Length: 301
Length: 258
Image: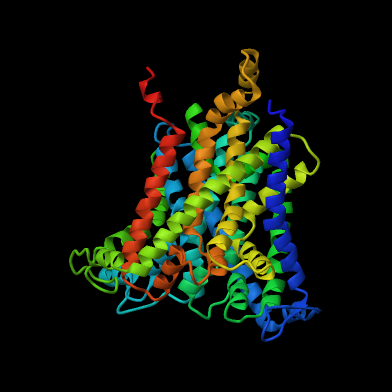
């Protein structure tokens, strides 16, 4: 099938050229720019320097990086802790209602994240919903603001990214062979033990995929900290964006983005190790909302 | 299963939906700043539809998303077919880079493409956005279509060939129709990715071609009350697309089975 040489040549070349020109080449250029100098009139000039990387060791950047990493870790962990039991219950729910319950996760997953970030803003804002609710309940007197704090940014990231944790988790928990759990039980394992030794290792690819899908955007979604943390609240993504816009220091921004790329590669290796035997299954889980693969599997039973 | 664990499910659903519901409700609130309910109004919707720059940017985004979806679906499906059907040198590298691109942060893609376009003097605007969005969306199409191709029964092609179908015919009449739900889902996904993208747009947008997500971003930053109405419209559009995707993926044949 499809042995046609012409089509084979056409498809492989088209795809490779596209990715080469618009993915590989720009990334190489970005890496190169991180070693270049700049002047006030041009974004970068062909003079090699290590200054951009040295500037990343300045306390100001280290602080931003540590804060970003801490916030990303806390958000990822929170999403995992909230999402795992949810995905588990979803995967074990009544077969008749499951597609509907699944659809209810897909909807926020597909909803514009700017809309969702703004939604959290309306809840947390001074005089916002939470404020009014607490006043009415008599819990708190007067106005209080949760906005423009680490907490509001954390809430925004967790809220926006939770579906990205749930979907891969769901896909891997749903595939779990229940007979293995029965076998563990028959062999005398208690619920904790069978969870730690059977369920957890087998759903590790889902955990890894979900964690990547929450961790990386937590670092790079610059509009979440800007809307919920305020204009001066800077995370790694905001730092890069600032240097490529108002700050107009592309080489420093490029050097900072190398940090992000290194983290990405690290996570990719971690993902490969976590899901060595079902890498492709996990990757398909990443796209489950688009592919609708999970509900299709549900219905075939 | 007992009922109690379900409470947890509904709590998480409440967490996911409550903020969106609040936005929808406040889009009809007369009060300027979302606080107390001051009565029902359509005024925010009216102000949206009388905002010509916003309408223009929405039309721009719609046009862009349509182009992106078609091109990304074409390229993404092509890539999926390459990976599924052929063996060639560099196939593993291609596969790896596609998976890497699906998790690669948009901001890195945005600034790297910005550097490329500035270096070769491609003006920022429709073309730069189109190229950027297609590159962003294409890997997702590939992964989606591949998932569909993996469940494809090779014997069907054999059967078609045995019955005398030419290669092109068996491709058009067997493989393509059976992969279509995956391709359609990929198209919808690319469309949504393009419509919703803020990050690439921030870097690749030019002065002559404003797009909706950026207009929306500035409305959010200025806390304009009409943002509630715009958010509601965007949410309803997403809902419509998902239901469409759902319908495409599972046509109602099953209901008729005994």
